[in-house]
Image (cartoon, rainbow, N blue to C red; front, side):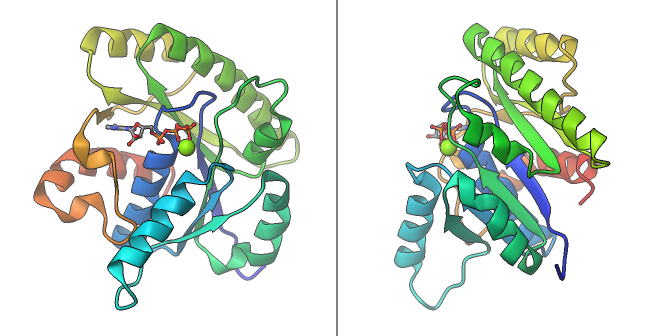
Length: 225
Ligand SMILES: Nc1ncnc2c1ncn2[C@@H]1O[C@H](COP(=O)(O)OP(=O)(O)OP(=O)(O)O)[C@@H](O)[C@H]1O
Ligand SMILES: [Mg+2]
């Protein structure tokens, strides 16, 4: 392979915690501010990222170039895709679907074994914390396996949609107690995050810069970009 791409998944068990949205935000920011060639592999058969991407590409027209690429793919084809085309990219994000039962969702779990980095969005309510703990155990198993074969898996959590302070603090403490290293910065529940562009980064506006910069640069430091 010409180039060894970094492979990252913004991942957790549950739906609606921000896996896809945060993947797009970070992927586009890495492309625009760190000059990385970035691909998102959309493994969610609902294909929400692909649909958003196609809509925006069509809306922008042929004169404009998206900052990143998106490829819709089934989970079982990911490994061979990366072997074949991974060298064309600096960074590949794998967008995983929500998991109904971690013991049965083997194809999704296996996607994590392709990654060198995982970033876990944690939403601050009791049910989500329980499922985050469950997911953390899966990540720890993947990390142990990778260690045995001489590879490292970097993983951190962060609080997404920080709104109710008390719940967020409890969730953060609970995850730390379970052994998850948490980001100092979190993402608030804000409109600017709901529909990120595939062409320009959120930090290209003053409001966006103020809201994302600290989080993005903490991400870059922790994952060595
Ligand atoms: N920090 C945030 N502020 C505001 N809205 C957010 C934030 N994070 C996520 N959302 C919104 O929450 C919804 C769910 O986010 P997203 O689709 O990224 O979740 P997901 O974990 O990928 O879910 P699924 O498992 O269904 O794919 C989206 O409408 C998204 O725009
Ligand atoms: Mg998603």
